[in-house]
View 1 (tube, rainbow, N blue to C red):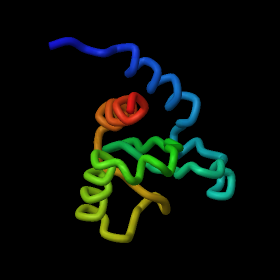
View 2 (view 1 turned 60 degrees about the vertical axis):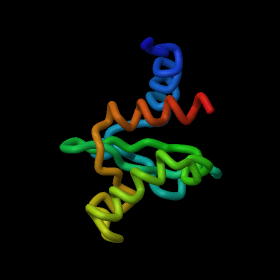
View 3 (view 1 turned 90 degrees about the horizontal axis):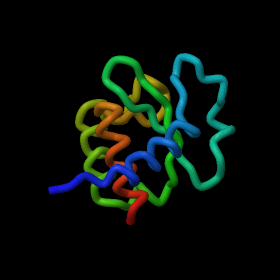
View 4 (view 1 turned 30 degrees about the vertical axis):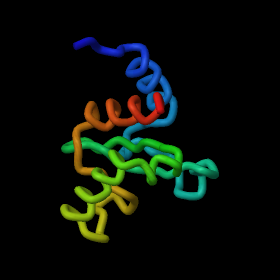
Length: 100
C-alpha cells in the first residue's frame, strides 16, 4: 500500500488558492466564478472552498451531499452549502476527484 502525495499536494495548492476562512470572507455569492460552487467545510471553524460544479455529479461528492442533507436538511447555518466533515477529509476527496 502506498500513498500518492503529489495528488494531495496539488489539491492542497488548488484549494489554498480558492479557500479562505468564512469569518474573514469579503466575497459575496456573486463573486463565485462561473462553473464553480462555494461550499463551507469544517466541524468547528468553517472554511469556504470554491469547487467546480462538475464535482456534484461524482459519487463520492454525492455521499457528502447526502450527509449534509441528513444533518442540515435545507437550512444551512452559513447561508450556503455546508458540508459536515473535517477539512482534511474534504481535501483528500477533492484530490482524488482532481486525479480523475
